[in-house]
Image 1 (cartoon, helix red, strand yellow):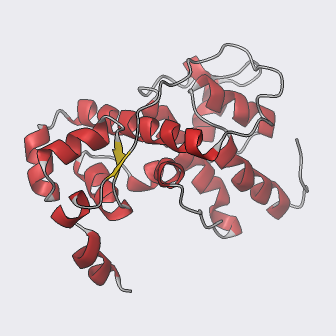
Image 2 (cartoon, rainbow, N blue to C red):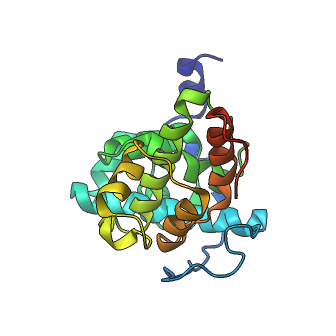
Image 3 (tube, rainbow, N blue to C red):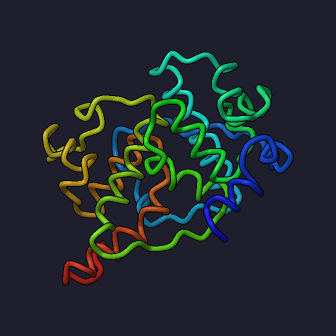
Length: 213
């Protein structure tokens, strides 16, 4: 199916007819130390989806606050009912990627930064990108988590031993740290590390270093 056919079938107002209601779930606070086993703990798929939907909504609200746009205008431009846009921003529903892409674009964000959140929220099976793009996708997911946390400074989420400049390099995709460091940054952002684990392991394997914990 071409992009145009997909947009015609699922984009715009028709996406509102396919809203999947989800119960909003409270989000864990930002820890100041890494709990034992936190990086290896698995999250239940249903709970992870609810948390990701809430985080996706927060990320969109951060973009909206930074853009200063009126929701009525955003809804009109997206071709979606105002109530549907509000539900998405509240993390109560997850709409198809085409509609999410449109909302992020209208709010001045980079859709790729919220792709991993959307995949987790919609329980989609992500495709592992080609090796040269693995680092960029990890960084994009981190930027989405940063938006969901209200876009704190790099210094505020830098684990001990990681400088602010190095943290910015991680967000920019110029540096992929050890898993424990990456996991701690994600936990400080209130994000679930599990969606990142496969990407990190694929990146490490592509660099010829094998799997590492």
